Image 1 (cartoon, one colour):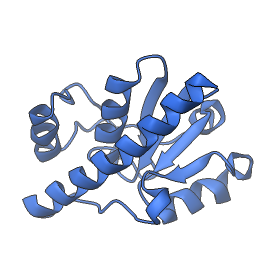
Image 2: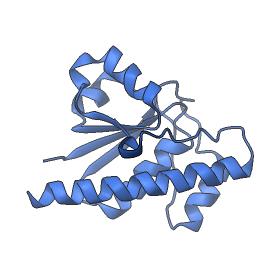
Image 3: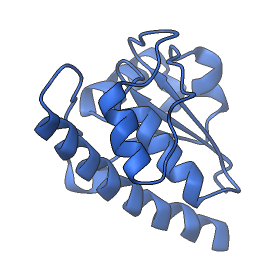
Image 4: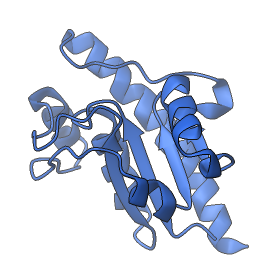
Length: 147
């Protein structure tokens, strides 16, 4: 059974905090955390992602970016990344993690676009992709609790 999920992106200020908070809101029995492969450590979530999250009833104001650590990778039952490259980086640096690392939109083979420093339309696209991926993993994780 999945008890802890780690959500990973690059800077840990846009995509992974939002996906993590959305999953945590709908699956309270699972411990969720997020981190970045090249985190902007100590930075708050990007103001645009905070606004988009707030519109969806997901608070991100208190988020502080953190760097991905060995302890997080070891402690997670499931690791969700935003891109194939991030998944491969984790599997390369922590070979024991193979089999528990997947992209948020793994089923379709799609990377979640990185909106950092880009136009609002890119943020909107990233949020739509995250919502799609979260819906999929919510179903998967709910089904894993039943069995």
